[in-house]
Length: 85
Image (cartoon, rainbow, N blue to C red; front, top):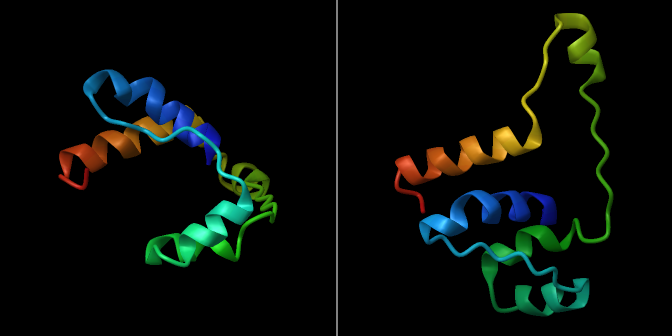
């Protein structure tokens, strides 16, 4: 998530969007989740590593995914266009 935040900050801060890029310790996230319902969603995943591979789909279908930066910037642009942010 910190890499995604850094990408968003790099591309959208100059347009006036404030992107939080500081990393909170897990215990602070757990405390914050007591008072903020949306934060509760991430509590169970704190400290867990999620390794996902796209090797099989690339091999079977010859698919080439976008880079993380391209995907994140496109998502940000779409959210702005749709009025989500």
